[in-house]
Image (cartoon, rainbow, N blue to C red; front, side, top):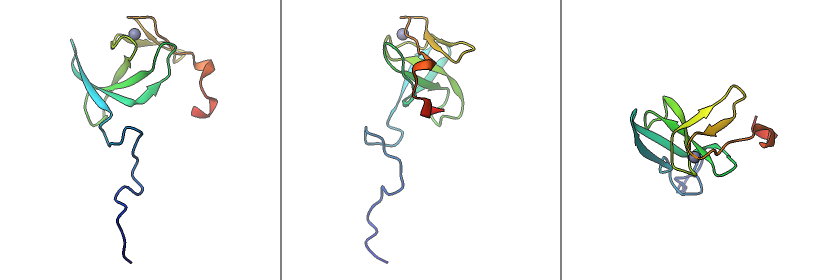
Length: 100
Ligand SMILES: [Zn+2]
């Protein structure tokens, strides 16, 4: 066999064109947190991104509100995510049912 040149075959590359490039850090009272902006939930004012304590995404911390750039985000028992800073929130009823 020859012509194996497609290094990206079988590798998930997102629209931003990189692996793990889609992550940035925020500094909070809790220390430095890692925001995965390719992971999250759609909010009414803007997406919520998943926040991890570590860059390898091993320990989940919470959510980041892209609307006001805050991690002061809470989730209630209905799995609704709400930002305490700007009031951005998700409405699970409106999510694509194929998601889960
Ligand atoms: Zn917010």
